[in-house]
Image: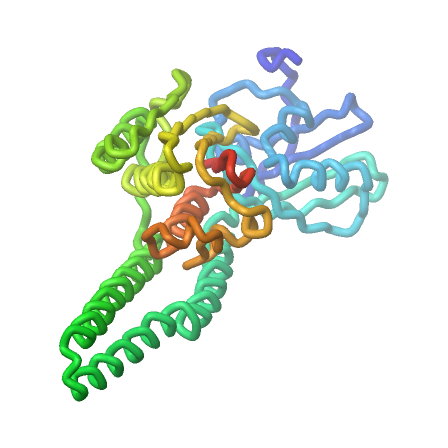
Length: 354
């Protein structure tokens, strides 16, 4: 389809086109889809010639909501139907729209009035995340944090008993275990506080060079990379201007690289392969390692707070189990999602989009 073709101007009453983004669809007239000037402005294409094309507009609706939008147009209804979908702007970002769709009595014209509800939607999503985090924190308080406290109580009591029995050497060992457990508990609380602060303040985004972010993450992990003999495969097509929060995205790479190194196979240096592609106008990254892998029954919960693999070799590794939860939250704050695919004893691939 030639998007540069000049289309004849249409005469409509624009009096009410000033506050919301309007479109009008006339399927009987060569599937003509008219976009009002203010809607063009919302999209950021006010200075461009756009076709009177349903295809042109529907391609800008997020893939998850596009089919529902098209089905609504195929089933005209004189009653107003409210539809929510994400619409891609000229700069590649998405905004949530509430569209009130109605068909004329003669079913020859379908009109839609769009309102930007991005802020409202983000507030709703933040509320959902906050409620989920509260549930997780309640569970953590009653389970994960109770375990080290029980250890402290037990070894402290044993130390007291051994001191009373004049078993100094055994008492010292008990006290050392108390101190070790206290350090572990301190790390858990610190990681939990850092996690809870993510997204509390306004997040600033800038055009970031992904090569620089990866290099920064590698510098942070330089000692671990050298000690493990880890090698990286980095593609040549990584974006040099990715709209992101640099500090947060560096944390994502640090956590994923660190896990690949930590959970490597015995006597085999880590190999970390990075790939990138643009998919449905989203930046999609994959980080694959040749490590221990994750048991299939644990893949769904691997991003939950304090969830760690229950395999014996994994449990011997240090860590609080909050790194992947942090990664997931950061990706979601960028409007993306993350998933994992793994084969135990072979590899793990973390795929995320922003």
